[in-house]
Image (cartoon, rainbow, N blue to C red; front, top):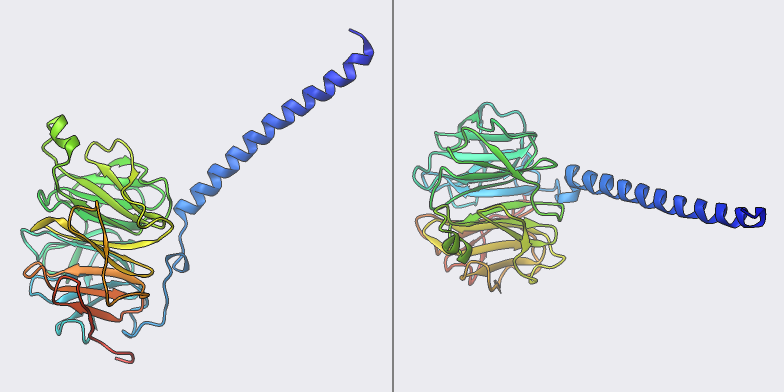
Length: 327
């Protein structure tokens, strides 16, 4: 080969090799960065605040009704209880296998409301059979202990789902006794909440499946869904684009109604998530948790991140604040 041609050929070859090495490094770095974003989430990433109006509660992530109709509040300062519809709160002196004070999720078995499951930062999945006083580990098979999402099937309550940060979605078919990993979860990082809607979808009908339902995830970019086949995740609506959905709430007695809490207030759907209506009375308030009274679906309780409690007696059409700063 002519020596004059060798130099350009060598230069071109070096450029090509350098390009592919650069692509490889960029791809590797992107994957690592994405993984880090999905697995590491500080309290500040969740938009929390330590200036809670409930002393010791810090910021609030979960709320539910206990067997007696009282309220339980999951916070980053522990589990709290109110016996007067959210006006006053006392920290619960929990017993058993509770290794952390960071409670992110609370779900109740509709067949027996004394059975409550909880998940949170370093909490894993734990279970109570006495209404939230004594807890035991219930996460055999789940990798990791940072649980950001927990859901129970309204139709078949032995079916539960958990999202372990950095480890994916896990499923239990035996009431939390054992768990099996299903998939990575939504590609969008920042899962904040899980809920299961046991509606029979068109896919369920066409495939003849008996385990009806859709698993829904509230994330930092809206609501994503996965059918019972776990054959991928898709966004349910563009209503919440670029919006963090901090909480999703359903009721086993009505599978088509769902509520969502966001940075700018609360939303409601009555057709299993196809269409959403913004609820008046909570505009501009970051709603991090919503609960539906299982004995009266018209009664809702919601909280913002610092523990200010709002109640509705007409399914979200209007709201009243129940507690005040300094309590």
